[in-house]
Length: 124
Image 1: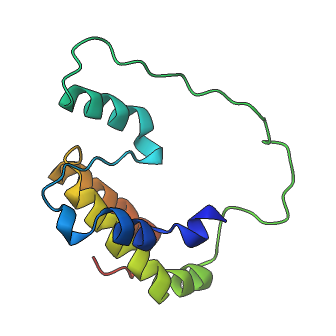
Image 2: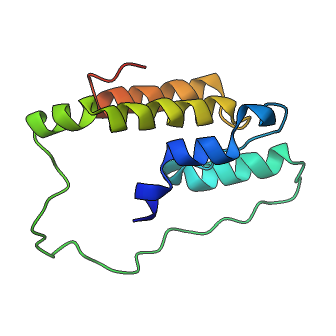
C-alpha cells in the first residue's frame, strides 16, 4: 500500500524539487542493495571494510501454489507498460537515478536496458 501513495512521482516532488539541485543525492536500488551501499560508503569517505549481510531465506515458498503467478502475458504487459501511470513512474525513476551521484552512465544504461526488456514499448 505504501508504494501506491509514495510512488516515485510523490517522492520526487517532495524530496527532489528543483530548489534542491545543489544537494547530493544517492540511490540505493533493491536489486543492487549491497553494491550500492558499499559504493555510497566509499564515496562518503569510508576506507575500512563496509559491513554487508548475506542474503537469508526466512521463508521457503518454493513448493507453495499461489493463485497468481509472477508471469504476465504479452497483452497484459503491453497494457501495463503503456499505461500513463507506468510511463510516469519510469520517467521519474530514471530522473532519480540520473541525479544520484553513485549511479554512473554505465549503470544507468543497464537499468534502461532492463526496463526496455520488461516493457519493450517504453519510451525512454
